[in-house]
Amino acid sequence: PLKTIAVVGLGTMGTGITEVLARAGREVIGIDVSEAQAARSVAALETSTARAVARGRLTEQERADILGRIRTGTDLTAAADADLVIEVVPESYDIKHQVFRELDGIVRPGTILATGTNALSVTRLAADSARPERVLGLHFFNPAPAMKLVEVVSSVLTAPGAVAAVTDLAIELGKEPVAVGDRPGFVADGLLFGYLNQAAAMYEAKYASREDIDAAMRLGCGLPMGPLALLDLIGIDTARTVLEAMYAESRDRLHAPAPILKQLSEAGLTGRKSGRGFYTYEAPGSAGVVRDALTPLDGAAAIPGRTV
Ligand code: NAD
Image (cartoon, rainbow, N blue to C red):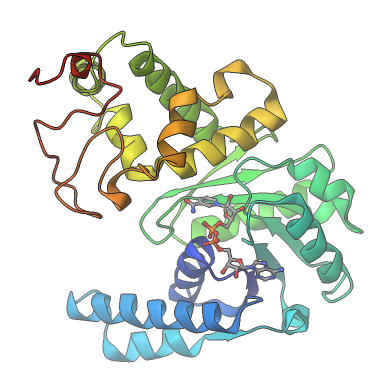
């Protein structure tokens, strides 16, 4: 049973995963290189659990218990007690290798090391570790407390027992685990980002307007949101980075980022968060689309003053 769990990297994913674990009764050791980031993560956990109390989803006592199960710090040796370590440091082999190498010398031989990577090779991380059979991928989705899916990623080196233990944990966390092999993006992102990239390329080729591409997928495929609106929500810079990482691994042209993703991110038009991406929003962070705004890349914008 995986009772004590270390989360290394207390950014977006690490903070969300820490909340999920502590809510499910796990003792969590949260570690970040940055003291300021560890403090921000604790503040975020205090805020989100306070919100849960305000909504009647937690009692004050439960909230206190949850927060009491979380210890944070900047010293990786605090992971020594962990039965499982979940690494959610930035998406870079250099950083992840370094963390895994250090952890190998800190944690017990039986401890499972899980990587939260989106697109790096779990196999490569495992092969470089002193415990290749106890390295696997544990891919949560953002925001971790809300999203049901967890992909449990095996490499050819992974021991079935390690997969089973982590899968059981995911179920106990209230998640729906799926077992997947090691390929860039795994199942969900592997399919999603190829699709989003194709939608961006279709728009870039002026094959259809952004509104029509999105409407086609909403109305014809029953999706809650069209691909260009979803790219704006994910962040065009983030999507570009994910695709670049996937392409570096897969060399599949479906993952070669459409040039427009590079142009928009370099221009700072990163989507909702900046107030403008494929669509223009009422304000940075707002979901409200300014209906008549055109981006310079819209076919219809080629003629000055034309309206849609
Ligand atoms: P983030 O930048 O928000 O957080 C990373 C954290 O790691 C930062 O707080 C940073 O200070 C810390 N860090 C850096 N080096 C460290 C080290 N050596 N030791 C300890 N901490 C260190 O990143 P994120 O969005 O949380 O992503 C983390 C991982 O999760 C990446 O591999 C990413 O691909 C993956 N992922 C992200 C998402 C997402 O939507 N954000 C979803 C699924 C998976």
